[in-house]
Length: 276
Image 1: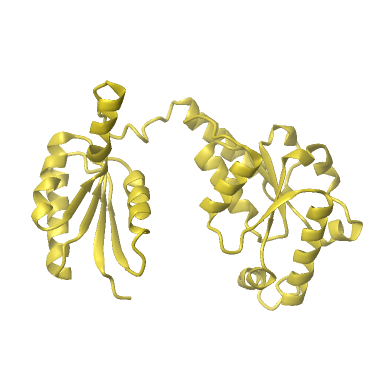
Image 2 (image 1 turned 135 degrees about the horizontal axis):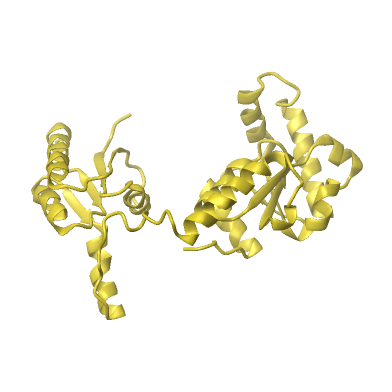
């Protein structure tokens, strides 16, 4: 693979914010391949100097200026990174947005290193941990207990994306998401599993093209009836018929990312994240 540029995501914390925002910006410029380097926990002058050296080495190696997406808060550390601006394009995302917000809010920011992710004792963190525990306990129909406490219950054939979507909802938004597989016995009865009847208003279905489903299942159980294309076609068709008959809202997950699935689900079901 030929890389067009090296992109550094530099942060005094985990680097998740810098990487997320950086990806959103770079995705607007299609057709380019980036060598991506995350440098977290740059919280001292020594670490900042090391970071500058890595940026300059990349510039010399690539023959073009790297792009540096930074969320450094400490002014002294950020200024050291800024010294590399002759060798790289430096985007400090906090400095771009903090000043306009100060003007609009009429308040002076009080920057704290790691503040955006340092909320281990907050209600938000507790809500997400509770949601993850709930989701793990209700994965793949393992337990019917406390389904009344679920915010949403995902249904669909095996390997249609229910588990990763449930965990993403729990971890990112504190949503208690159970998931339940639709299996041949359900199709033969022509009804939803009995445990789901009292919670039909919480159901949201995921479907997938038979071809993609067969590919995914082949990786799990090669050359099995479970993965056979004809069987996948039958299961997908039966699941969609069942969801239509039971008026379950559903989404085709084939070409969508977990983030897109989760966003669409939350908008459709009208779910709000728990905490901030």
